[in-house]
Length: 205
Ligand code: 5GP
Image: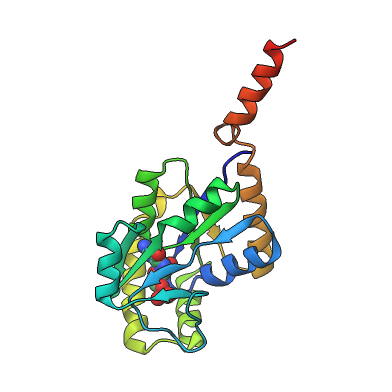
């Protein structure tokens, strides 16, 4: 059985990463969505273990010390990180794992796991991004300003990603992303075991 692909999805806050990745996992069976740990407080409607594992700063720091995280970063004053075990279990079971993380974490993953696929998601324009952040109504204006400032910094890293996805229409975005990810299974680097098996069979004739 071939291993699953590690997929990193980043993008500006408000670009729709969460909606798109959740929809992808709901519709197609082969994906696992990694649940991150964070020191941020839950937003209304968020659920422990589904949206995040909510930790105190001290708990988060002990996860770092115990090497339980594949990557971690600070974002607008809070810690965020990817628990290692779930990701490794999914990959070894041949499933594709999606990490929805910010740029510092994405760069750490690319260094550790060069075969990971990195995708940057954006709205078609920044005016639309601002509108979505305000319309979401989950953050104060001050936090929205911080997130837009952060978007400016994040844009500097866009060229380091493998793919850009423009989230204009949810439906197109979900099917487009699934097609892209499915095609990656045809990469030679994802089929090394299969290639070895074919060669072995040829030696036996
Ligand atoms: P939010 O507070 O809006 O849920 O997330 C803020 C940012 O943190 C988003 O860009 C999100 O992708 C990122 N994020 C969520 N989980 C992780 C994680 O495990 N690691 C890193 N590096 N970033 C994360």
